[in-house]
Amino acid sequence: MRKSFFTLLTVILILDCFCVFGSFGRDANSQNRNISFEDSHQDKTKKRIELKVNLKEQRELQNAVDNGHQPWRLDPIFVAYVEAGPNVDKSLKCEDCRIKSERNAEAEVTCKGVKNYIVELKRLIKPAPDGIWTAISI
Image 1 (spheres, one colour):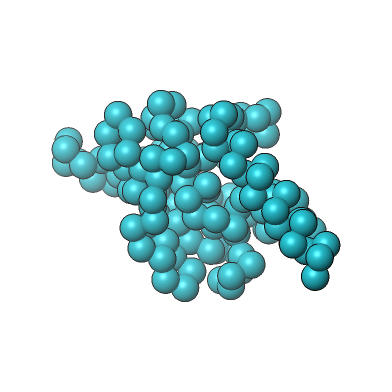
Image 2 (tube, one colour):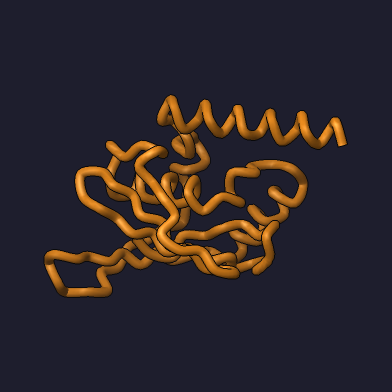
């Protein structure tokens, strides 16, 4: 019990540091992501970017999280921030993102930067509380 408390406290402190210093998710690994963009709407006021997801990569990430690595992938806010920040608005800060809705294996997170963004996320590999969130559109 005591060990798990300190592990959780350590994870929270690390996530907080990433959020404060704005470097969260912008490491060498994020440069090699398999993401491509498609416009799914022609409306110029609201643009939606569909993210192509590599399921093999998601399974590997889920396995890593199951083994105690990258626990931030269990939080839809952090996943939304990591996806929206480097991909559409580099000025975004973690604290600019809020959960709009979350139910079962689906969530929507709003991020306010230069523009307002809605990031749609799903638990594709493991639709359970210990499943990682994957951004599917921004």
